Image (cartoon, rainbow, N blue to C red):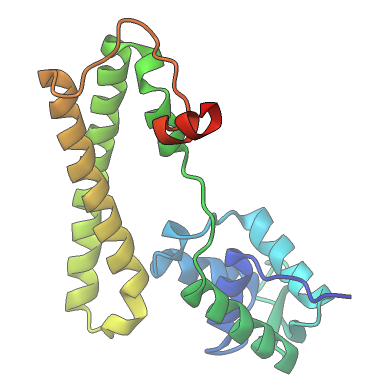
Length: 206
């Protein structure tokens, strides 16, 4: 039976357990403090479910339980040797392989002409407004990380996400300008597109 493939959240959990054993509540706190929730979807329910799956697969194990006053008992987990092996394998894949990803923005761009000029320009402007706010927030985070002494190698993911978002903002602003000026024109009638090139058609009919 093939080993279970680690999800991004599973990798994030094992990433923390490299440091020390901890309970899920502490994991969630650290993930938010370190902006891990900017790259993985972090919800309390999904985090606890992920830890349970890691335990079922033998990647983590219970090493302690803690109780603080009247609060519910907290289970402390540590990474196993199998967990370390699985983490290494998955981390290498995530860094070295090119994954097939399908951002919904690409589909939005593909149907922009179907929306019509008024709606398309309005929605694109909304996107740009949100991107500007996100880019500004990114700069605050980068400045904080650069000044608090955190080694840069620990926030390369933040640097990449910031650069990617800044590029998207620049590209979207340029597209809005092109559409608004008419350099890229909306079509009054739908053009029928074909993947058959002129050369291939001539070869078939000759």
